[in-house]
Image (cartoon, rainbow, N blue to C red; front, side, top):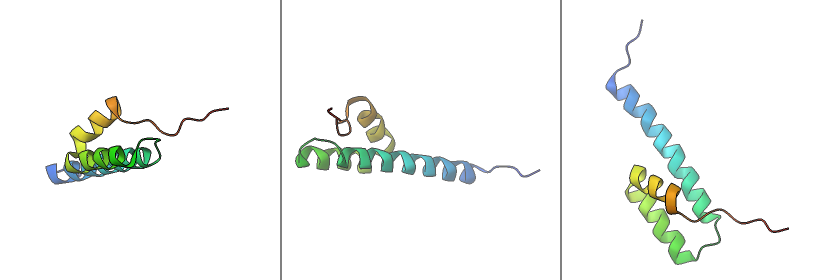
Length: 68
């Protein structure tokens, strides 16, 4: 039976963080916020990947609103 080393677990966790950060960045780009706010949100997510994602999840700009 293969044992999972810490490197393998952190690599998988890193891929999850990367996927979540990319999702957050794409959501920020698609939001109705100003360009300055978009750049600041993206910088926060890139510089602080986990904390920036959590802050964006709680307080970040939402995607495009669909009006009927």
